[in-house]
Length: 246
Ligand code: ZN
Image (tube, rainbow, N blue to C red):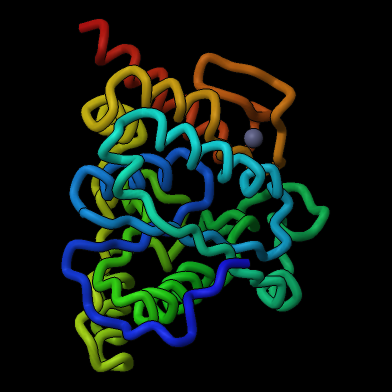
């Protein structure tokens, strides 16, 4: 785990951002978005005993590939913080952390939901950002295709931005560039930010599948092809390809 330097003065750096970076499609696109906009970009990841540990293994390789894509991105990409959130695995009982089949409740919420996960992630990220003098937090939450996760909603995160700013007595900005994009538009955004090279990094080096499957290769990347995350990713890729051909 990285440390943030105990003796550092947390001077606020306007041009810096901390990206919640899991190694998935959405957070990788957000990282590219941040690298285009901020002079200094740091990343944070959370290990909470999730079944798709493979996602975390993709992270380091991805960070190297992102550096290779553009010299400016290499210059801007700073420290990676990896937090051990094993406690979250202990207190939640769901299909991401336990050996259960993925299913949906009557409200349409999948049992992959870790209650309040993003609230915790952003709060821990804000603490790290405070110590690093970083004002902006970036996350890949999305309301358009979202799977019923209340902590991904725009209003939830706007409220959290206010709560964190008050609680830290410092302006905290939460940026969610994918909030109103479809999955197809997220692929288009990746193309706009980093061309076909970034699209290919997202296809082959990010991981989204809930079951951690890296054995089955599809046009949209690796995964089981059947879990909700794979289905969304496939639908988004298909729609993006259709739109590209028109
Ligand atoms: Zn899958």
